[in-house]
Image (cartoon, rainbow, N blue to C red; front, side):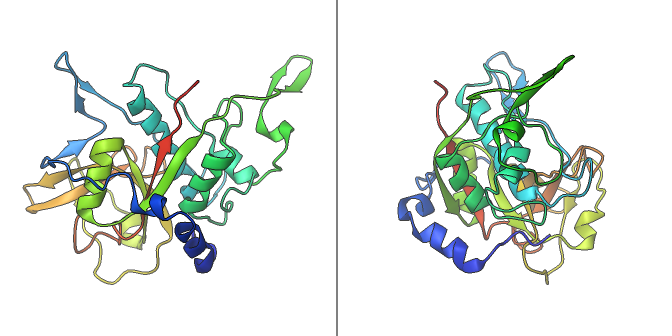
Length: 275
């Protein structure tokens, strides 16, 4: 799945708002050796999981919607972080982005345009518009409806969720700062067969080949760690291929050489507080 639409469209997007491109994590923090939004120490001594569930973009049929999954899951996590895990999880609708062509469809798309769509148009949640892995119409009927014994009805003016800003971020230190300060980010990667078929044990780190193709997949970084076994740091990554893939749908991708190009193009979004 080639998720880039047209390169010049992407350039126009990132140049249209220079402040967004610079990111919101430009101030350096003291970075810990490891950090994981799934296991944040709480005041009671227990760890708190700020990450929303792993999903499968390829059910009920194949659909190259990783761009929509990575962006919405990162924003869903950031809502959870914003409210300190005190509200029910908000699962933003991937299907709504597909229906309304926020960036593309099942043939691919780019996260930058998805974030811009969420900023301008907003997005409903998954209870309004559940995932069907196909492109439908951007109509009130397909946006939000509920069904009863005697038929279905459109839900008028369903709640929408927005972001107030978004931007691009690159490089290990900048990405770490952004993740630590504000939450998960979505990033593009190349996916060779060795990655698709990876089935590492607990704590295993994926090291990719030196020569990789163009980015063809989008994932979310939720933290980082360090492997004593290989003496290298790694990114903690959420994929969208279901919990049966690798370790419950998660994967550790090495930092530096072999990282599948993960630090070249990442994006963040800032959720708009709920009213």
